[in-house]
Length: 232
Image (cartoon, rainbow, N blue to C red; front, top):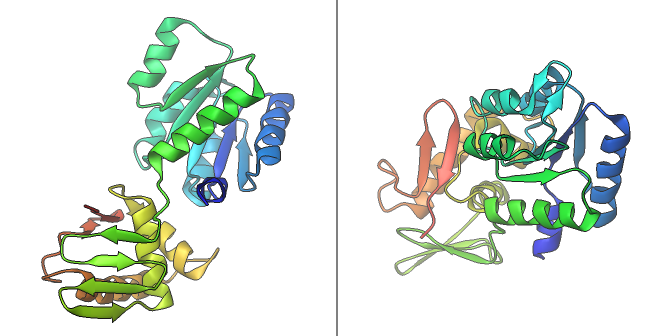
């Protein structure tokens, strides 16, 4: 269950060496990852991150129009996705610089395929959790297998869209999920124009999961960015 959940994540590969991109893509594809994107420059990587919103980025340090460190700094202005550096540079200063900027791991070339997979799995497992069957919120319990909310002596049914909304937030527990990412989870690959509908679904979900929907403590709005779910 967790294995297929991890394999559903989108991974961005950033390197200016086509042969290395091909190698890493093959390693990940053979393991079961099927949502892969690639970029060869800082500019391309930023564009992919803004349009496709990957769940993990694997960055080379040396790039034609900059370096992975500056790319990570720019990414952190609009994304908290985990980042793994994959590079031929193994100097301690480089490693500390990458980790100091908020990278989640650091792999030195050449590397063993199994090492790459273990580190990718570890980062994804640490940053994203499978919602499982039930979660406990401040005022209720949500059962995803039954699509029901249990609050005091009430049982409230979730619609398909409400279920998808809560499950997406629960998988990213405590982390901001952007408006666009939630719209994509609810309405597919072309989520544009659905933000008003998303807000309406959030209101209805709060009426089911919050003790006081006007002052939510579980489904939190992060102004200008999106929402996050606080799970007990």
